[in-house]
Amino acid sequence: MPELPEVEVLRLSLLPRILEQRIERVEIRSPALREPFDRRALQRLAGQEIAWLRRRSKYLLIDTRPAEEPGTGREHTLVIHLGMSGRLTLVDSAKPPEKHEHIAFHLRSGQRLRLVDPRRFGLVFCRRTEDLEADRKFLHLGPEPLESEFGGHHLQERAKNRRGPVKTFLMDARVVVGVGNIYACESLWRTRLHPMRSVGRVSAATWDRLAGNVKTVLSEAIGEGGTTLNDFADGEGNAGYFQVSLNVYGRDGEPCLRCGRNIRRRVLGGRGTFYCPGCQH
DNA sequence: CGTAGACCCTGCGCGC
DNA sequence: TGCGCGCAGGGTCTAC
Image 1 (spheres, rainbow, N blue to C red):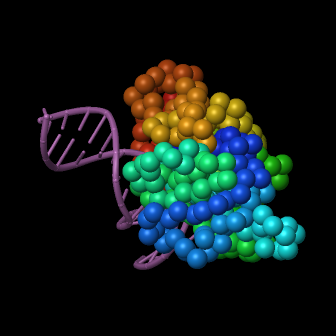
Image 2: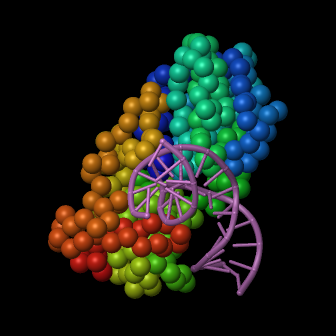
């Protein structure tokens, strides 16, 4: 479900609704997602209040602080990754749990923030806020694509001494974070760049255009509330609209909107890859 | 070191 | 209506 825009949309929708809320109780309903829940660490969030919401890569970061005695250095951060099928929504606490509801944070408002994730590729853990950056999950991540440090020059530098198709490269979180399968396909289409093109045979000008298109596609998707294919929803359960703006993803066999040739699908790095054989080179 | 492939898991839509 | 198959927006680990 979620690439960077979906997580950002979720962050923005949840922020005004849970900020300053006290977490009264942590309800762990399953033993594990992608990794086992650390119950003790997660239970430390009970009694904390939500200080801010951040996003790094496709991780949603919920910063908390002690509801009493603030500034004592006991700030914790709840880290949530939605995997492929995760949905994080705010519902009334009286509402009965849904199938695959693995964890819920009961708030003072009488609502609970719950994670529903059928495929269980998601991840939830808790860290001291000050230890977060050093965590293995974050240590080797590339820059945020919407920050100024990301651009054509960065891509070109990282492509040195590397081989392989440009699409796989673009989806490598050590190169740049947040670009998943949908937005990689869309960015390459806009750049007229073939997903199989070797990274060693991409010009500086093309790296520039690609980086620019990554920024454009992601920004537009955030503006449209994300892409809802099956199940994405923001914190209130609202679907996104960017799927109507998709130019190649999922359009296998349909004519290219730019040149009319039929869009093709092939598997690259184990993922369905959509491109136009007529105008992507 | 970088790269390719397997794997984790459930649900859905399709063809038969 | 039911069954089996292929497919799915992510990341990590292993073998080479």
